Length: 339
Length: 290
Image (cartoon, rainbow over all chains, first blue to last red; front, side, top):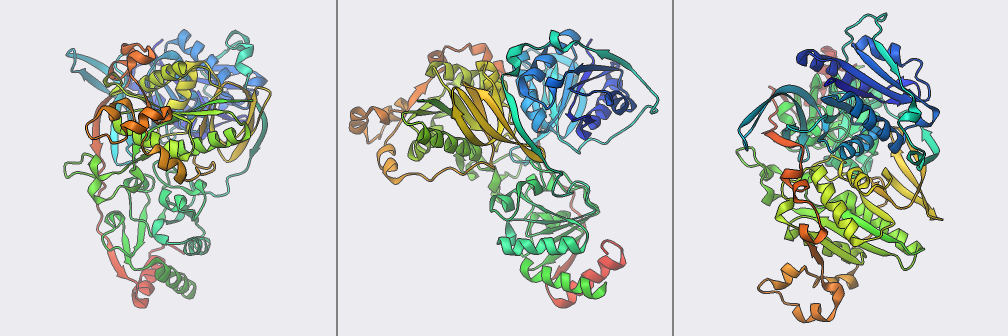
């Protein structure tokens, strides 16, 4: 009762990285509150879930094994979670802010009538003073998220409704294993039939194509990113040449993608991917907060921009003031010569 | 099959183009510096509605928004682009709503519109980026949802087949009507505003706008019923005030901070050959690249 519950998203039999990140954070919050960490997984083959999640310090693991629960569809997962939450009464329920999590979490929160905060980048525990009636509530979850296109950071609380629900962005919480690989907690295998109805399976998946990601932006040591200032798709294509030469990947701002210079899967920023490469080369990027929040932890930042006062220059280690279509070919040329 | 289609839309500040003047010196947002626009993904949703109407003649598209009076601007825009009817849900009781209270009010308005086959909306709005309102409206209407929709493949025999985006791929799902679809930015762009429709509907106005001083189209509005944008309050949709606005919102904003990035000491270069050569030399010698 009143524990912390984490939804483990599955890709076939593998637990998603963001779920393991949430278990790591969940363990920390559970220790702070003096409660247990519970996890829930739903799918067709859960045989390896225990060994994947227990090293992160899960006390209780709820398993719902049924072929019909994989791949994910909204309603059966919602029904299972809502009933489980009624039984277990967790005070906090965390879900990854993935396509699945962002489909599932609002459906669950609306069913339960509880509050939900989307796309959090930090979670903390703290007190809240309800100014209306002068009461103080201790040990609430602070759900911290960027808002307004990433220009502000808001701290959201749920003073009176349980569970306090949040979806959390991938890649923002570190993975922390706190138990040896041999550690096993308490596994509870539930009978799925007790939790779903036939009507939950009204939506069916006819076809599914999952490709291996076309880029490795998240793991790249070098990222060459372009903004609206690249000016054209042709100019943007130079970045691929540079990235290839440096064994890196190409990223982009939302503005560059809206302008059609490259594809959505390369978007870096608050509504895209968060990256922490060794080197980040920002080309024609002015540096809106929306974008900077997704790359500010890069070790070395190089900015190429015709505007000497571009906001991104403030956080750059190296600033080249000049037109991208002039600077990048020169850079490529000298790099090839010196190598 | 004639369809009753409802499109949910939101008027949003254009956060994609936040310039230097968009933030006040004290770190608050200068809303006046940001143009108010039709939420981009809601336009993608409207386009899907217009395509459905073309394939199913006799269908009717109603665009619904919740907001203050000025949100009627996006309803007129929806009419220019081909919507048949527009509804503004506006009441002080809705102010301060989080996503749950917003979806409650929208669901109440949809129930008042009556029987509907499909509710379409954008995946998320660019001011909040939560993507929560669509699924929460679907839940409150008790209908299935398909999120991240990119294309409607077919609609027949009371079922719809939809292609949707998933992590690193696409999925095709089949679902019974009625249902709610959230459409993402990878779907087809909305068709432009139609000039003939603009000539007619630029006079469209809510009853509040019609009653305001200086309203010039009273005669036209009296003669053409389609020029009245419906305006509903909480009482009109029969909602419970305790579930709306601030009192109906489980989440509260505790604190809002402006983002300040730590400035670094940076080395400056020009675009000259010597400068670029020395930059490449330094990056190679300190093993940043290479």
